[in-house]
Each structure stands twice: as structure tokens, then as C-alpha cells.
Length: 179
Image 1 (cartoon, rainbow, N blue to C red):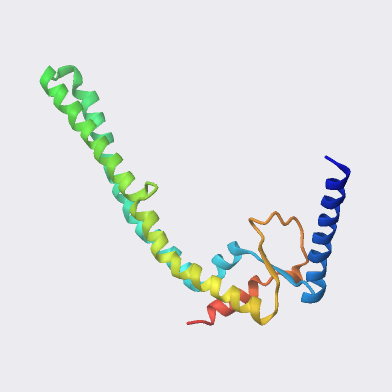
Image 2 (cartoon, helix red, strand yellow):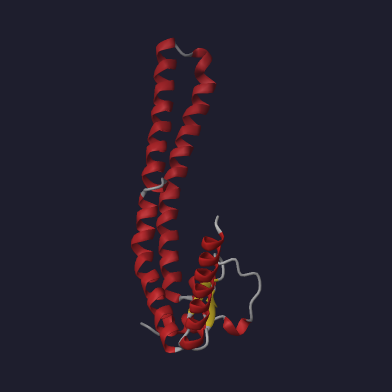
């Protein structure tokens, strides 16, 4: 790289650094806060109600799965006990019946608990309004208190911070007072 290009590149870099630094000087003090989303979700009453509702729905689906597994185990036990006295056609029929039960269970499991299953869709359906409320409350508090940046403690890489910067309790209080 020529001396001229190095000189220009250095000057441009210096100008950019000065512009960046001066924008903070004229913008006023930088106010930082953080939130603990896990704490918010565990102490926000409406989120807890939805979690309980989801757990109830999951329990009924899980009970169905356990019933299917019980039926399969029963069929397998019966087959193993009677296999030595069964005709070849009866063995084939029993094996086919067991395989069909396994397949039915697998389909049910995927339909309910698969990546795009009922449970995942239901969770999104119920949690989306909650997440929007949380985001709106965070935005309101950020604007009201002139906070420049709010970090989420679990995903930000924050190792240690002054507890005074934690606005999670303010958010929880505001959310629980929304009604």
C-alpha cells in the first residue's frame, strides 16, 4: 500500500473515531440496564398461568402416549408368552399389530411434540401476546428512564454487573399491574 493510501486511510479512521466519540458527548450520558428474562417469566403472573395451562395440555397428551406405550408393552408381553404355540400366520398378524401400534404412537408423538407439533404451535399461540406485553413494558421503561441500552442477562455474555442496573423487578411490577 502506498504512503498516500496509508495516510488517507489513517485520516479517515481518525475522523470516524472522532465522529463516533463526539456523538456520545453530544447525546448525553449513556445509561445502561439489564433484564433477567428468566426471572421475569417466572414472576409474571400471566406467564405462569399460561405455563400451567400448557403443562395441563401436555399432561393429557403425555397420558395418551403412556397409554399407547402400555398397550404396546402388553401386546409384546402377550406375543412373547404365546409365540412358541402360535401358528406362523398368527405370529405374523401379532407382529403386524405391534408394528402398527408403534407406528401410531410415532405419528401421534410427532403430531403433538414434534418440531411443528401441536405443543409447539400452542406454546407460540399462548406466549406471543405475553412476549409482546413484556417487550412493550421494557420499551416504556426504557423511554421513561432514558435508558440507552438494555441487555438481556442470559444471552448477553454479562458476567457481573451492578444490581442497581437490573430493571427486571420494575418490569415484573409493571406487567403484574397491567390487568
